[in-house]
Length: 459
Image (cartoon, rainbow, N blue to C red; front, side):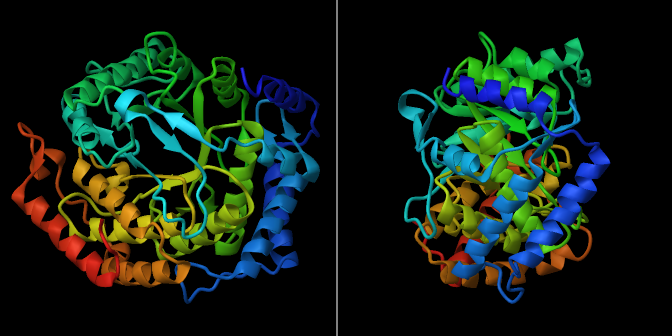
């Protein structure tokens, strides 16, 4: 029960911390606090670049984020109190973060560790549609198309639109059934792909603690899988989320925390959002004590992280963390385009190159077509995403910037209007053989050729 004492301390702070209402926390501690530290530490991103490469700015961004976190803490909406830490406690808890984690078992066990800027070791490749919606009848073949790709070190499942023909209902027996249905079908897909030991991120079908705790219990998802627990925007948690944390810690389970600040929200522009990413990833380590933590800026207008602004924010925030803390950090490609479109793979080039060069320890996707078009996801774009990560490992920040800039220019037109959602899995793959159609394979081959011309050297 590692971190059990830390957990009890966090719980105590949930009830003994400074009291305030949620609006006060939003406006005084977040909006005003972010504006204050951005101005004090003169945080200014270079808008002429995608990948930021100013060491002094990384130092100032790190200081601004820790100053913000110390002053505001994390707000527990269940207790109406702020969970706060001193700067000394923050620095000590960062030192206590895990230096390595083992995911999966047998031949599919994988070691995960922090990475530095320009690290020649590639991140762990998480093959996944990242919660994109899929139909029941296509769930197993779709997930098998991801698991069967050797480059994928772990997988995270899609989201079912129904379970046994019924919509899942939060905090009901149907949520428990949906969560178990996800586990059972993921095990089926892994067996069919010949990789029963591969680790899973879970539980996509559990919105509340009810389904989550049920499906990661005896007979469900395994101790070598990683349970996902959110912290919501901006810098907030609640007792329901902390129940998930308590269960994972009490059972020695693996856990991955995530947090997505909103560009244009309480943090304001790019600079404030970068501060919130850094503060949020550190806060996840303090509050949840996870094996790893992930984040990405979310655009208010498009639910994607391949916009030039969101990529710029990510490069600044993730490189600041990689340079100042020994954390396993991660994210995933979330593009606007769908399967069988060239722009989808160009979006993968930009995002995977930026995050890899800036020090992520795990990186996944692809959350194709923003995850909202039924069955519009395939294993091929996820394989390509992983191949880009392997090719980008070892690139300098300037080299990554050159490649990302060319990729962004190639798909910039699709960010301006209606997104090309492409084709469904049934149209992009032969469902019987689980292989891409000739059309999709040709688009993939051409994308590798373009990316090679931009400077990526595929292994």
